[in-house]
Length: 125
Image 1 (cartoon, rainbow, N blue to C red):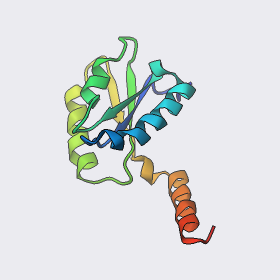
Image 2 (spheres, rainbow, N blue to C red):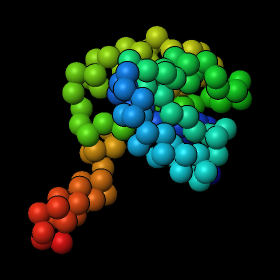
Image 3 (cartoon, rainbow, N blue to C red):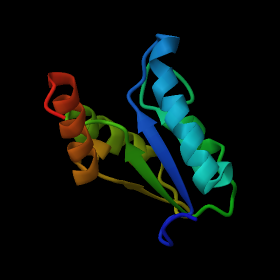
Image 4 (cartoon, rainbow, N blue to C red):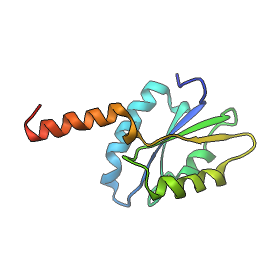
């Protein structure tokens, strides 16, 4: 079950023409969709590969009224300050609210996991 304020969540990765690059995101999405359901979650890419954010929005059922876009980015850069908000603005409709969430890299749990992984690689774990 998603948080009550969202009908659907779209995990948004940057994108790459390299098919191997997509594997970690597809694996993550597979786990997320098993937990929250395929009807409640999607994986999309900002550029360079598909499905795009536009594709993901177009595939939503008509009963979806509020969507959260969760960027699988480490930080806010040009894409999250300009490009993605412009994409969302173009996709917004009177019957569909799309909210851009902060990037996953800003989450304290992700930061802590990265610190643990760094310590593990450096021999301090």
